[in-house]
View 1 (tube, rainbow, N blue to C red):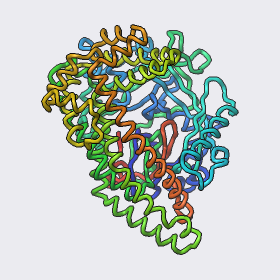
View 2 (tube, rainbow, N blue to C red):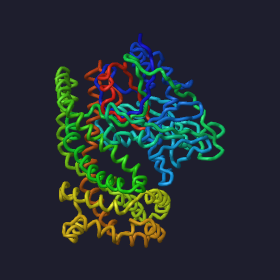
View 3 (cartoon, helix red, strand yellow):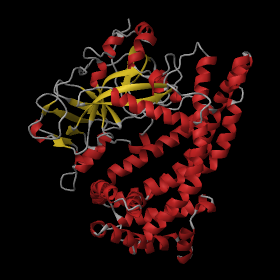
View 4 (cartoon, one colour):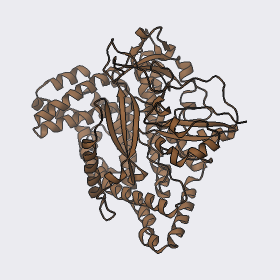
Length: 599
């Protein structure tokens, strides 16, 4: 006899091959999936999972920090999430004297739970289909910019007219490549405190070796608690706040699981791209992912060596390293998985079936016969820009830390160049907060080594037309030696020092801009950023707009040409809940469910 258990795990899903495949918005379960789920052994109703009028499962599944899934497990706001999801908070409270990353942390009482500035917990209140309203006035004859402009205006009008209490927000998100839109009403709590975390030997057991791998052996969990005002509504941190009283929380079962148990996976998945063409998947596997893997591989090796050599550096860089390593490992698995499963060939086979079906209907043939050839050409055209874009974003926007700061400072400088003093002062407030956090966990010596390594990669791999004249001249001054280039830049720059950067930004906007333009790192970054915007990002966006329009049309065509196929959202953006379900069978079946997922 089958018994029913609830298994709530924290996943970002790839692609699955079992009956019941798909990610489903919870409010659609009653119309699409309830009977099937109950036939597989589920004892709950769709109303038990998603209800607007009473507490339901959706009220216990929480969006943690804007980037993870978490679950309420008590009537006093106790929150369970992954160890890696709470890693940044654990690191921020750690020091050599109190190394909570290494030794773990457990609050003896509620008074000793640790507050976390900026950490949030978001609940879905309700979800509504607003496609008709948002797509009003949009036509197939329009280009992407024109249709998006209408969509943006319709979204703005609906947001303005849609009335919610002051503690709630609304978000409107596209699904099915923009063929459908859903409105999410959310409530976000701003006082979330660290309750407990296991020592690193448990919470990160297996580290990156096991990350994105099934089975995984780590105790990947941490505990937080949501606090609210005395009215149980969101409030900024205060010692007077009280534990949040949820509408619903998950009871803990110690019965374990057995073969053929019904399994429900409910959470906030990352972005998925189930319905991409074979051309897109091929580009990801053969060009884009390998480029990003190569970049992060070099950066991680440098940072890892420094962390192993110094305990203080290990604490300082732990969260950053984990964040960079997470997607590095994900991309490695993505390439391996797509190749081993023959994903491109399967896509090609499906596209052939689609093409044959369109030929059977004159209307379909007229509307859709050129879709895939057009996509093929566009992906060929966009490839050099997409490759360079990934290289630029990874090196200038993520892995060389001081260049990421320069992107922020360059935007501040742009306000002064436009003589927009109000914009300058408003943005400077944000910059000040960002820099205070940045320098706390920044080592110029480590960043200098990463700079030298990744710049050599950039100058070697990226087409010379995308390297600025100033950048090339600076390398020539260093006789082509990237270590010397990095040494010159970091020795002569004000931006690597918090004190000097603070002094720089304390000057008048005019003086600040003059000093900044004399800084070697700023000049280098600015010249490369301007060239990138002109020669890479602009043509990339123009081609990508065309691809997105075709992808939306392709998605619409698939649903029309294959009316008996169930299509589930392939763009579950952050702040949208999704449900997966299956029967928990043998180990091999579990592997099918979880392969490629992040625990």
